[in-house]
Picture (cartoon, rainbow, N blue to C red):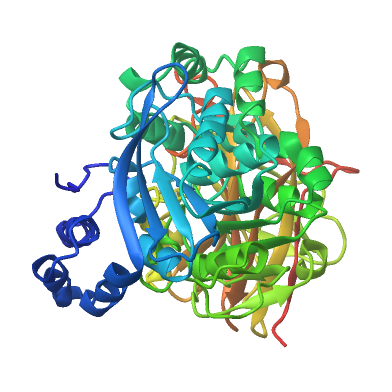
Length: 564
């Protein structure tokens, strides 16, 4: 049976990826010289010759109490001494059409490190039966039953069980650990902490990402409860059912349980994550009191760990091996001690690494840049230090069509290009100033870093109900107008705020970014981005005024400091 290349738009496998996974699976199931020899074209034959001597791989169907059958695989070390028990790691699947087979490239490494490895696809996903509940209570109950089955296998140490998961598997792992104390360590890459804020930020739906996830799940495979929530989010009916649905699937809701259990948790995310909320992951990590680690990397959802899932080197999986070795006693890693700190790469350098003990120590102090009117003879406003700047107004049209400045031209893929050193280029000279307001610093006199949290205050007077603004901070070359995105955030105004000036203060996504000498920061405030959904999709054309009244002057707080 072939591990076919999925047509999932976010996480599609190349033909080469599919062929390699097919070959790995065949060699695991049938470790004959012919099967192992096929792996030589990827330089993997020697590894799987070693695996064939020390590991045993099989595929299994795990039947839950309600009759749902989970597709799974189990790898265990061979030739254990009588009474010898080994640690085990459980791998719930990411959201991809091949389910748990996405982890095939990791199986050998875990097993050669002395682990039993159980990978499975959650109910409704890939070849598992049942309906998709989105890491809901039923999925958590399934995880407990998976552990129940695992500990009956010969040689598995019931006191040394860890969970590793990417994306959907990360959420499943974290939520399972809150309910089952047998889980002694967790690693979640491309994790989420607060599902509600991932879907609904500052009154604004993340509809493009939501619809992409629904497509991956397959709406016809979703539970009735989830289908109802899907329709409500599409209709912008954000009621108690939607909030409760998200709350029960949010690890942050179980913070007390993790802290009482002292569960060791390692989290991974990316600066330009478009699927789940990065600030929520940072806040969740900060609230943990047990052993913890946080890794924030260049790119978007799933980009950084993909090579590691395929069996190649990747920082998230290398850290995962160390984490499990430390807490479960295996030997899959490099023998190093895991870091209990905040680690990050600055944009757009995946080879960089910055480390601090906590987020508070990591984040630099903020400086206040005031939004000011344009100098005489110029069209763009200014970002200036010093005294607050009051008394100006800039008007933009809301037409349902924004500028070419967007969060990401392509979900996930734009971030992957960032990891390859090819961040998307925005042409700020082409911005229609009738559709967006632009504020800029003077060219920086020295190279500077932005590291930590950002906050924007602005007063807005929308002429119609349910208006949206999106603020983008760009790193621009003033000579060419070519720019890269640093961070962003949306804000949607309520119907009650139509026709009156409303001062709002909201955070932008945190960032770690280096700005070269001679470049400038540009703040673009637009009224449309296809990544987000306005509260009212049929809003007529109207005007939106950005102002800075006396006593509530507009500003951008930014952790901007010279590079050491």
